[in-house]
Amino acid sequence: MTVTANGSVTFTLDGSNRSTSLPVLKGTVGPDVVDIRKLYADLGVFTFDPGYGETASCESQITYIDGDEGVLLYRGYPIDQLAENSDFIEVCYLLMNGELPTEAQLAKFRKGVTYHTMVHEQIRNFFNGFRRDAHPMAIMCGVVGALAAFYHDNLDINDAHQREIAAFRLIAKVPTIAAMAYKYSQGQPFVYPRNDLGYAANFLHMLNSVPAEEYKVSNTLAKAMDRILVLHADHEQNASTSTVRLAGSTGANPFACIAAGIAALWGPAHGGANEAVLKMLAEIGHVDNIPDFIAKVKDKNSGVKLMGFGHRVYKNFDPRAKIMQQSCHEVLAELGIKDEPLLDLAMALEKVALEDEYFVSRKLYPNVDFYSGIILKAMGIPTSMFTVIFAVARTVGWVSQWKEMIEDPTQRIGRPRQIYTGPDRRDYVAVAQRA
Image (cartoon, rainbow, N blue to C red; front, side, top):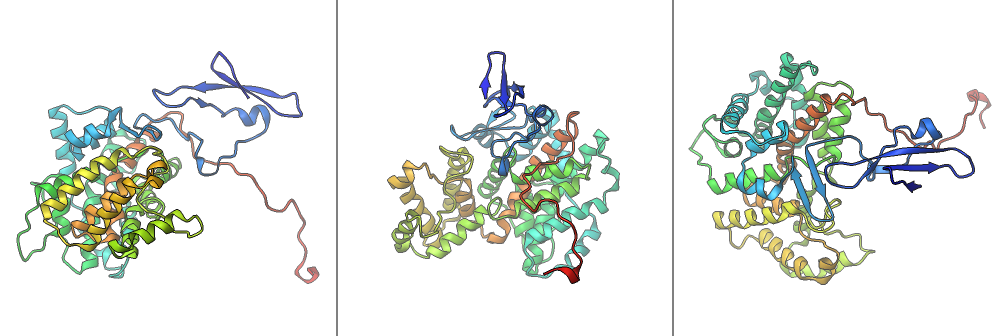
C-alpha cells in the first residue's frame, strides 16, 4: 500500500498483477479516510474490520470526537462550552439543525417540544401488559416502538414536514414514557407533563411528584439533570446510533428506528455502564475494602474490572467527565448527603484512582458514567432507570443522525460483508444413510 502525492492509495494484490488506486477523503478535522467502495469491483476482495473500529460507515456533520486529545464537538462547538452556557433544548436545536438558534427560533422550537410532551391516552393501556418488575428498558423498547401505531400522520420518511413532526414527538414524548415506566414499577399513578416547566425540570417532576402533595423541583437538581442530558445527547457512530442508522437505511419508520436504538443501548457494554458502576461499588461494600479491590484490578488473572474509568474512544480523558464531576459535587452539596456509604465509597475510589500511578500512567480517569451514576444515585433514582435516562438524552442524537441519513442522497441500505468460515458446498444425504 502506498500513499501517493495526489491523494490516493494504491493497493496491489500479492501474487497477481492487479492493482487499484483508491481516493483519500478528507473531513473537516480528523484522520484521512481511504474510500474503498471500488475495492471489490477492482480487486475482488473485501476488507475485514470486526466491530467497525477502523471503518467509517457514513459521512456526518453532527458530532466529532478526538479520543487521543479528549475532544467532543457538537456541530463544531466544544461540549464544555455547551454544558456551561446552553440548555438541553438549545442543544437539541443545534444537533438537529446545524446551527445555534436565534431567540425567536429557540422560542419556537422550545414550544414545539413542550406541546408534544403528552402521549395518547390509550398508551396507558400498554403498561398493564407488563409485569410490575419488568425492566424499564424493556418497557421503553415496546412503548416507543408502539408510537408508530398511534401517529400515522408522520410515517412518510420522504416528507420533510413529517420528519420534523416525528422528531418533535420523539424528543418530547420519550421522557414522558420513561417517567411512566418508572411510576409503573413503583406502583404509583402516572404524572402528566407540565408545560410551565423546562425540559429537565418537567422530567424530574414526572419522576418524583405524587398527587398527595406538591413537589418543587430543585434548580440545582434540574441543572444537573440538564447537564446529564446535554453530555449524553450524541456521541458519533456508537453502537446504538449505528443501529438506528442501519434500521433507518431500510426505510423503517422513525419510531421503530429509535426503539431499535433503545434496544442496542440496553447492553451493559454500552448504555448500562453507569449502572455497572453502582453494582461495582456495592460489591466493594466499604471504603476499607478498596485496597484489596484495587489489587485485584491490577491482577490480570483476577478478571476484576474497574467500571466507570477509562473509555474505548477517549485515550486521554473523557471531556464530559470534568463537567459531570462539578455537577456531582454540586448535587451532593445541595442534598446535604453525609455518611452515605455508597457515595463515600465512590469519592474515596475516585481519589485513589486519580493518585495511583497504575491508573494515572494508563490514563484510566473517571469517565462520564462514573459521575452520572453517583448523581442519579444521590437523586434517589434506582439503577434500573439509569440507562432509561441515557435513552432520554440520546433520543435527539438518534433522531438527528436518522434525519441526516434520510436526507443524504448517497445513503443506501446497510449491508455489511463477512468472511465465511463454515463448510464448503456439500450434498444432502438422506437421514437413513447418515452415519
